[in-house]
Length: 291
Ligand code: ADP
Image (tube, rainbow, N blue to C red; front, side):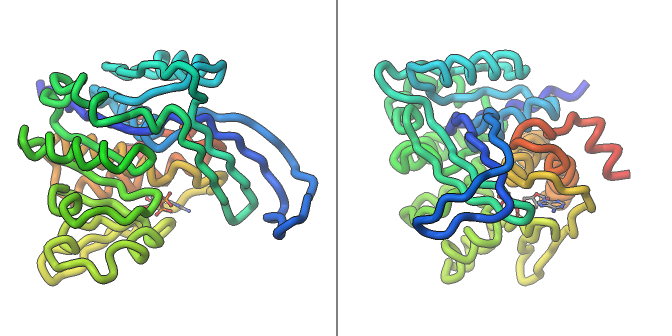
């Protein structure tokens, strides 16, 4: 039997505070919303849960604050079939939150880092044994930049495949892009960060295109997979599902083409339910969608 792929994700844990409204308020304006709900989120935790549901052995390294939100999120992660949970509480600090405004066709998000700011290079150094055992490492940008660079350096040292999901779009030293094997922006992030990037960086990009799937380069060729139709409810976390799924397929040694098709299918299922994590599919559901 094939070995279960080990995906290590270093990233954020947030509680999503979601208000659904008919439109986004103007500056200085107050409107009456339609609904409020909370949902576990944070790009790191989302990606970890996406990969775990798909059957990967996931190690997750992150931090929560000393509050009821942190306790709730930790309990939720514990229930989520994550093989290795390395989440220490930061005393006297709040857990990360994402305040989300959701309308029929739009979402606006503000993230307050809280305990995620304490995922430091030192904290990573306490978990190097975990890192070394990974088939692939995945990081997004809701943790401190110095931690991302430090971890990328460790990945190079240990020769571990590294996926960088540059979300939200932050300017990073060129060195980081050079250390990554794959870089997975959405269209907006790609436009903000990579329009003027060097050719060798362009070759690493896998750009997600919302309902239109994803594209990447192979030499001079632009390759793409058109994505899958879905009955969209909430696209929050679509990119995270894509990344978790792509990481799992990469850890299995699949080609970009196969990994992207699978990730598109997984993400297209995830957008059919409210909340970032609720709709994340199991492996068999993705296979069925691809048939
Ligand atoms: P992000 O969620 O990071 O903004 P995208 O909007 O590009 O990223 O979506 C990521 C992936 O989710 C896409 O590549 C696609 O596979 C899937 N996806 C997003 N929106 C839809 C949709 N409306 N229908 C089907 N698949 C979608």
